[in-house]
Image (cartoon, rainbow, N blue to C red):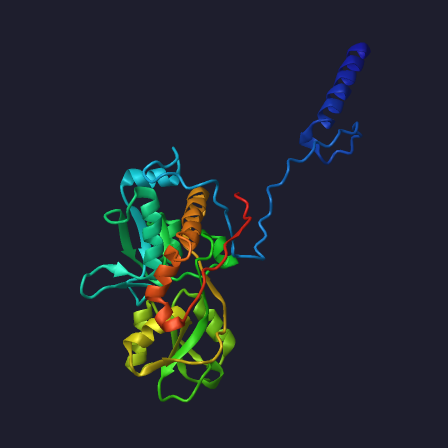
Length: 326
């Protein structure tokens, strides 16, 4: 009897020791042999967004039109037989509908047409323009409603968290438009006054930061701001110089003030952040536009037609690469 109890007690102790070594009893202070710590896998590179202009570098020369790499975003677009682009139809000289032909045209549209031509060989018949408002630019990309957005969209770090950008294709800046007989030049002189800027744009934050005492008013489109201005519901419009130049061209009683710009607005083409291959391809297209043909590039021809009359001469911004794909 005693021997049986002794054996049972010994087995119980052994079972207890085994259980104590189990991970089910982490709180039990049982000494254990030191186990070498396994090497941690290399962490993915942390993207430094101190430079929001940094995009993904093109890889090699552009593929021939009509022969997109197998499995690429570009091949899927080619198979669909059209590039779907989110654009403006009321930003004169950037993206606006020609009242005679009904065709949407402008500097931003030329960027889209160049991308389409690189995929299909020509843009005509291969681009579906979807007119979107400023607030809809990012959602239209994250939802997959469009392949690309060209709607005077500023590249910044906050937006890189939601979408991807091409390299900068134009460098704009925020200014002020007022009535010709209003003797003001900058926002600091308009405290207590209503100023319009497009909703969902960087212009809103810049405007309020420049003068927190103004009364900000928003509209979904640039034309919406111009309508409020012409109705006397706001005393001015604050936005990108490119947009304001188009507004002034439509209203002989408006002028863009001579005050210095209150921000830098580098424009990029918006693309879904998961389509890094497409970003690289688009950057290759933009590089070609900025450099070919030598002396009279496609970029220069487009700028001269649409923006130079109002904004003067300019050169294409230099691309900044080095962004690491996740």
